[in-house]
Structure formats: C-alpha cells, structure tokens
Image 1 (cartoon, one colour):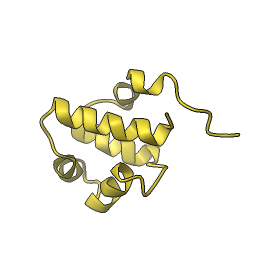
Image 2 (tube, helix red, strand yellow):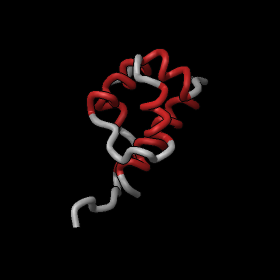
Image 3 (tube, helix red, strand yellow):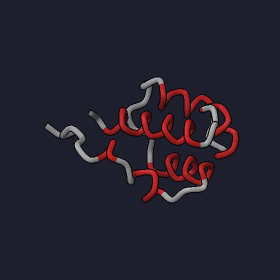
Image 4 (cartoon, one colour):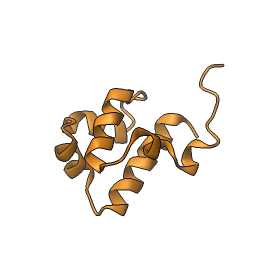
Length: 80
C-alpha cells in the first residue's frame, strides 16, 4: 500500500470511530473541503504534514496517534 492510500484509510477510520463525515472533519479542522476531497479522491498524492496536523487537531489527536496504525507498517517503497 502507498502512503497516500494509508492516509485516506486512516482518515476514514478516524471518521468512523468518531461518527464524523469527511465534510464535518473538514469544517472542524479548518482544512478546506476541496483539499480533503483531493486527498480522499486521490487527486493529490501528498497531503502534506501541515494539513495532516490540522486534521489531527480536528480529531483531537496527535500526529503520532494518527500514524500509530497498522496501516503504516508495510508501506511500499516510494522511491525506486
């Protein structure tokens, strides 16, 4: 799995755990809906750590907690 795919799955996982929609976490975190849509639709493959930090703030978790998931254990090599 690529990191962009893992980030999308983690976003959906956290939304499900908190009964939030992607639209709602966008509003809570202050990340524009278009940016979140680009992330979840795969339009962008690099969410950026600042954007992930804002989303984490919306979820009320740390960046460390965001990446503390089995999804990030076996990522594909990005540089070939």
